[in-house]
Image 1 (cartoon, one colour):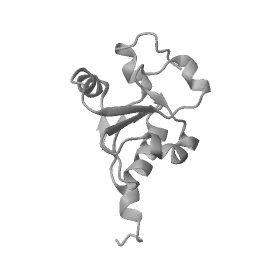
Image 2: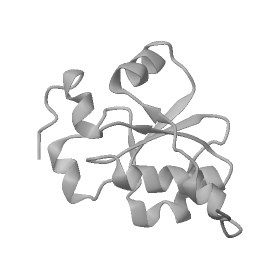
Image 3: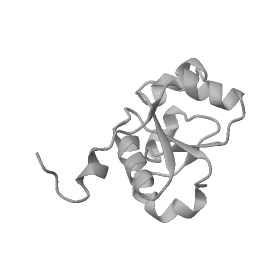
Length: 116
């Protein structure tokens, strides 16, 4: 099967990271930026303390706030939106990882995060 030009990057697998792996990176003070891509309304359920909030529709206009020399860890509720954002950032030469299966995986480290 032959794919059209550009299709290969679309089908590229997004690197996934577990809550345990993320916690270890934070504990080791590795150079990462955590980005919450959920809506403003979803923040009421909690967010990872170290995360910056850049909702999906604003990712493109906020590229200048991200550092290409750091791993960008993205998350949302279920890893769908963050996976799309990770692909977009990868296409702009960022190194990314997608927290699986989303924000609720982080609840073990921040019990105040509410399920929804």
